[in-house]
Length: 191
Length: 190
Length: 186
Image (cartoon, rainbow over all chains, first blue to last red; front, side):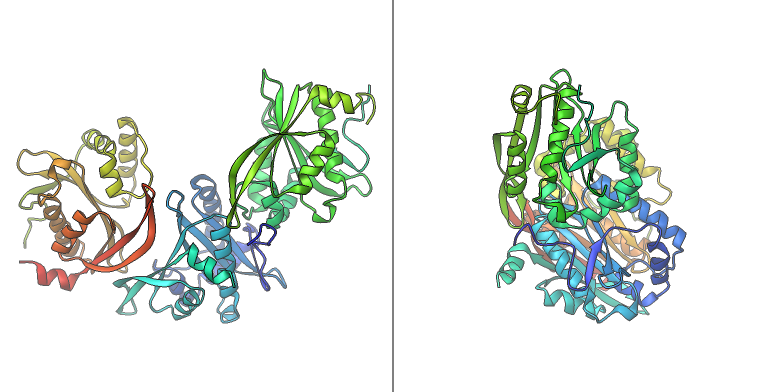
């Protein structure tokens, strides 16, 4: 681990700031895909206009500045600077060194291309070697097989099964909490 | 009197255009190595919009919260970084200076040292300060060399102040007194 | 219809004037042991005025963040604690709860357990929830025992999620489903 390493650049994606003009219409399109919404959030799937998203992004930046326990990045393709998704570390408790990770690739055409995996790798490096967090958590619905596979691949362990915590499509699903400790990540990284 | 306050051999200092500087800041901040050399708070992404709002808020303060300048090359007038003095500690007549060269091709070529010479002349001959301070991270030897060249002296270390990339680093305090600066610089020449 | 939602054997539930609540809360906030059992965030000192503003700000919201109750002991009518059902997810019918008995004289005597029974009855009978969730610090063994008694099951542990007094410890996750509660209730 060294301080010269670029934290925000991967082989094919970059983590970066919000573009308040260009991003809202694209993000609005994502909210018209219920499959995406249901994978990334437990709130009822609901489409949002670009104008509303713009307001939410402004409020988000204000919250980031004031709360000091939240970091938000947009994910862009390195090749053509196209907005691919978002990644966030939130609910940071500095005195305990804990935080929660969430990411999403908005357009289903961009799934299964390794963008999520690359982003997660960058996010872990950021969380452990820049924010110096001790543990990261993530809550994932059991039906999000892609996320479960992804998080397990980078070393997260399933710690909690909140039984039948979700109700979608007329049946109950478990909400799983996964955790990863810095020492575990460092041990993998030494290789 | 040498009225050539804002330029030296390689660079000149100009006013900050908030839109241009906000775009540059946002881009420079994406280079996490640059950020980690510059600042102790975690490297992060900043939108052009929020950066511009912050710059405008600072610019509207009277007296200024800090004296910020844009660093341009004399050669082709390119914006390569920024340098600034914090609000002066009255009645002590001392302040902190901070500099960042966002364009990495300019590192190690004397641009920073040049900008620092200009700002010290500004501090001692225009603001009439008694001393100027700065802090620098122990893992930034290039900057430390530059500051020594400009006349700064190490005054102390805060041990293990920074936690980055899995280890602890010291924060170094440096300072230059007016009398020391007067020995190596002339008010009437650059 | 069983309407006894707000009365238990040892305790009953109330809404209090913000003054009364603020006075009790700010007194309990000063008890470090209580705060370390209850909350993740570091201890701070808040004046009664600030506590009152914090309480009143919540009441002003159109849709409250959760369902909040104060707890009084039936005998002596003393205000002893609170509980809240937060983040009620309407579509999922789940809630994350918090409960605190601020008066240390009422610890370990069944008051918390009695209050929890009222909470569960409210959750399942009035809010028609499907499950109730909670997170509790692993070192809070008295609370964990109480939760088991009221029917909660262990659902996992968030490892090393807390650092206090120089020691790392887990946060325990527990939950109870409606069908489990229905079986338990006499």
